[in-house]
Length: 101
Image (cartoon, rainbow, N blue to C red; front, side, top):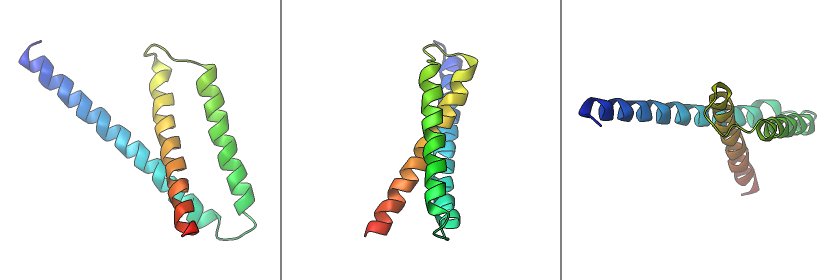
């Protein structure tokens, strides 16, 4: 590989890492916003939890139904949505620890 090709690959990897980090943190922000705003009234807490679990399980079903072993066009969409889902679940997990302490 030439020096130019190496620099281009490093730049692409930095861009992908920045995008993945942003999407993960966006999912974390969504969890904080969801747990702060929608669950302020006790009537919405069960409905909000049911909707979030349904969305996560629906995405898991679609992800496993359409296995992307090669890098097709739909792979990136599922990859980024999965990162947002992981950020959402991680944020809710952290909020549960905050409430438990």
